[in-house]
Length: 285
Image (cartoon, rainbow, N blue to C red; front, side, top):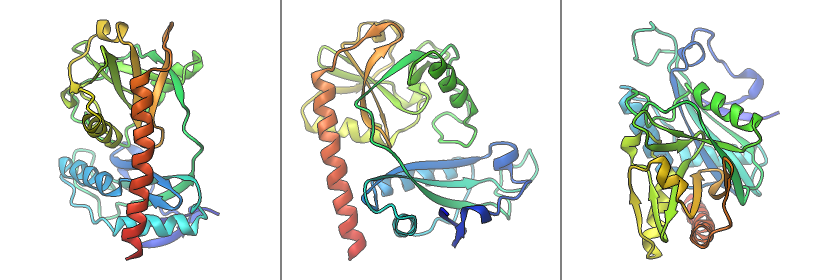
């Protein structure tokens, strides 16, 4: 049986003590992070934890976070996930309390779970979501448990035969995919929506922008319209589990495998290997 960590205890999944009045269950009041682990080592854990804490602060939560790197590594050992790729999920629920009060309930839960995950695809297909993203939402930029909007849009895309879907925002600018950030390449220059578009401040998004700079590839944050997407030479998306993935089809338009995407994808894989080795070295000290 799968084990998980919750509020300082190691539990079997069947013993997970979720209160039925927890607002994470009843209202979707919660936050989470999804990390990639390689050969038993979480990748970019410090970055994920920093974003998690910033998100908690936006909700006024002073959450007690464990020694996350150590906890996640032990969790991977307990679940026999020390070889290959795994998904690590850190989550916090709001706990019980009045609907109008954001304060953490005394019974709130902080949990970490690890599960196996398959290899990332080399490319994927995307459709345009008919629903706009609200860049003015108080949840914009948060990896929030209120995830049904993404699930509905993603389900529609997959029913139509696509792997992913992308949102424009209410201003008509490109925002993000349901489970990833989006990058557009024109004239060998990379463009991605700014955080003001309402997109998630993705960890892989940030690493990709740093990699592009180190490789001498111009990468800019820019408000992108449907015309910019229509004129793109390459499109790729980024997420923690998939890494950097090229888009082979957007709606009816096909995209060949592009040289900029391929170069960045190779650099991404090398960075992940290096980051995992460095994390393993730190844990062994």
